[in-house]
Amino acid sequence: MSTFQLLNGLTFAALLFVVASGFTLIFGLLRIVNLAHGALYLLGGYVGFAVATKTGSFALGGLGAMAAIAAIGLVLDQGLLRFVRGNELRQVLLTLGFAFVLNDMALVIWGGDSFTVPIPQMLKGGMRVFGTFYPTYRLFVLATGIVVFAGLWLLLNHTRLGALIRAGVDDAEMVEASGVNIRRVFLVTFLLGSALAGLGGLMGGAFLSLYPSADAEILVFSLAIVIIGGRGSLVGVGVGSLLVGLLNTLGQVMFPELAYFVIFGPMALLLAFRPLGLFGRAATT
Amino acid sequence: MTDVGSAEMKIAGMTGCAIGVVLVVLAVAAALPFVLSNYQVGLATEMLIFGMLAMSIDILAGFAGRTSLGHGAIFGVSGYVVVYASAQAGLPPAVAFVLGMIAATFVAIIFALLAVRTSGVYFLLLTLALGMIVWGICLRWTQVTGGENGMRGDVRPAFLVTHRAFYWAVLVATTFVSYAMWRFVRSPFGLTLLGIRDSESRMKSLGYNVPLHLFLGFAVSGFFAGIAGALYAMFNNFVSPSTVALAQSVEGVLMMIAGGVGTLFGGFVGAAAIITLENVVSAYTERWQTVLGLTFIVIMIFAPEGIIGTLRVILTRGQGDKEHSKNK
Image 1 (cartoon, chains in turn cyan, yellow):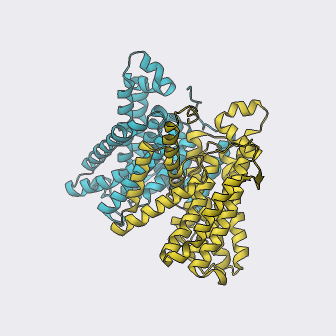
Image 2 (cartoon, chains in turn blue, red; image 1 turned 90 degrees about the horizontal axis):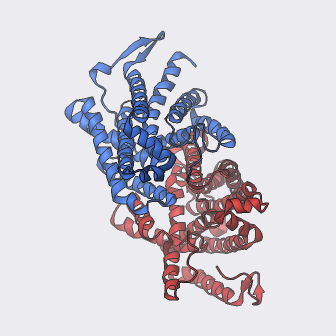
Image 3 (cartoon, rainbow over the protein chains, first blue to last red; image 1 turned 60 degrees about the vertical axis):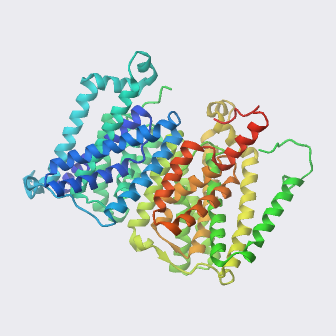
């Protein structure tokens, strides 16, 4: 693998990290497998695209995407999921139904064409890194991924909310028993996770472009990452993203038509030995 | 379920009453083509095929407690192989059909090897991811699968070309497959699956090899899904990535749930309901996906027991609900 391809893998991993970290936060704490996460990603991209082209500001596009997707997350969590609390299977299938509706609505509004979110002037062009000429924007994605990782790490390990989330992942009932309104922690986590999907959509929309089946592709990557990394582990998502991102790039270089197999292999191997993923722990309840 | 230990006379495992019901249903189903238009006969054929798919999912979901979101992929792989074998490789339809079933069983075996160690949501996630990988391969491996355009080819043997003839052929196949599935879930093996659904740890301590049973259950379920997929390919003479897409698995699961998890034959009720809904909705709007999604949400919130399950709840409530604690 050349440096260029390695960077491709790393930048893709950074994007995957942003999306999958939201997915695993929700899965880890709320025990909800949000299969609408891919649809939220795609919708975030579309909203970001619309805002960014209207206002001409990439940053506003990002904020708009995050706010809009968090709002949709609020509707999903408070409007629908509250009716099926405690039943994992029904929750999963409900989010799947929600994803179908979201995708179809996106198809109505934005049609079947593919869009690319405009990159701000500052991030256009390329720069020299490690001896190759590489697009600046993708380096920016890499940096954003690292910033999001650092931010989430600080949030989880050095704030009260983070401590509550971590405690909730281990045993939500105990947290509630000690006088914390765990429902509020759940909601904040759900909104944060959704917003991350929205942010990912905008970032991905600028270099992978947005088209109607992009949601399914990103969802399968997120699933692979969570299966590899384990439920609710930030480090797990990081490692999983790196693995999936690099393997996917490697696969595309070596067997362009069967790239999916290259992710599938390690996932299968891992499951044979660690059904809960690299950093997963068995649920306590 | 009907009581297994009754002293009544049984023919082929069925009581006289059950045989009567089955014969009446079959007679009505066989007579349908005489009163329906060609288009409606096509719909009825589709209902039978998808009913079979829903039942194959129910073998795992209702009897082993493992809901698979990858059966659409197994179903679709069979279809791809049937069309490829007959249209590209020029094999006779019967050989293509058998190859399709073998391919589906093979895919199911791979899925099963990976999935049997997981349960609950992890099982769902894993089968979903595996199904999507199959979809990705069908979409990208253009040389073999025809990519996004799919593959077309006249797969049906000459004597099944008309709508009616094909419907009857599917009806015969469905009858045999349904009977086989029914016998399967009521066999000692099927009862072991039920035991695993209810308490995995108990079955384990009783000395049953839980992963092996789940593996075999999955493979058998995939085999049946493969028969449905091969028939579907013959029905359409066409396969495309949407045949293996997540939506296919989801529709199958929805039909299974709409019919009632663990009712087996509810699969036909669910398939009939969803396909009828699809056709009614399609007459008014192109937004079938939205309606499908909304149906899913509504069923999950209001009728998770499905049509038959909900009816059963209402009926048992009418009889003074004594033993209605079996629902999880």
